[in-house]
Image (spheres, rainbow over the protein chains, first blue to last red):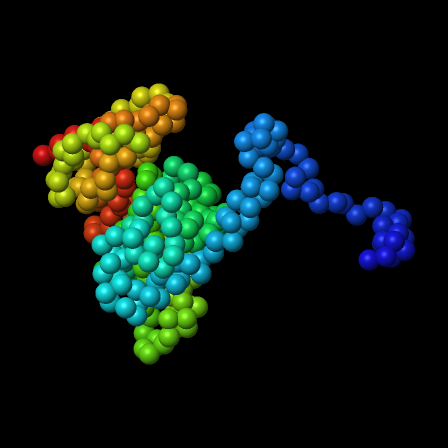
Length: 213
Length: 100
């Protein structure tokens, strides 16, 4: 936009439009603390600004595509699925995914059982496989209601389960991380791993939805 | 990390009760599960106690960590859902005692 156009818009009809506040116009206590600690670490030469930037970039680069790759492999390779269920940490390592300090437990949806993951205490989440958690996963509403009324929460995500299906909630409170292995939808026979991975959404690996072909 | 760990006291299938206690400090046992009775689903291994780690102490000997399965209807008397619905949660051994 040129300066001229901006001038016209701002003042041309005689009043100011309200301006939406910037997200960072005021720092919270913890944001100020983060900046203070980061600047001290950099100032004292313990880390460099570029190392901090690179760590943030690496965190942002993780995406649910990693988890989808694991699910698609499990759907097409029964031996891999067996290893994944027995030791999730080791099985995702085969695909080049490191779980770092935590261990991975894979929970499988099947006829009669649906799994749902929550962290009531904070926001524990399999970031290596799914990237950063969505905002709703960290909300008090989801964290309290997923354990208290999981079927109502599932319904709000459009997932309505009949009473003969057990809903099993996994509260991720300590050193384990959970990945839901959804059921492979009908109509996907003969599909390649890549094509299957494309229908495996983040939400289906948290357990709030089910993949459809 | 030190290799020292408490011996695991509970086997899969064992009935356990979560201690109803409220010590001060950092805890990883949610309020809603304290005092509840469930069943050991599996032993996850032994980990440094987070209640100690939070204060920059080593958290050793490491505590066995279990996944414990509870019936939703026993946790929430007004739970709206079938009797088969469950919840599984990680609990450290020092929060568990045997249950009949």
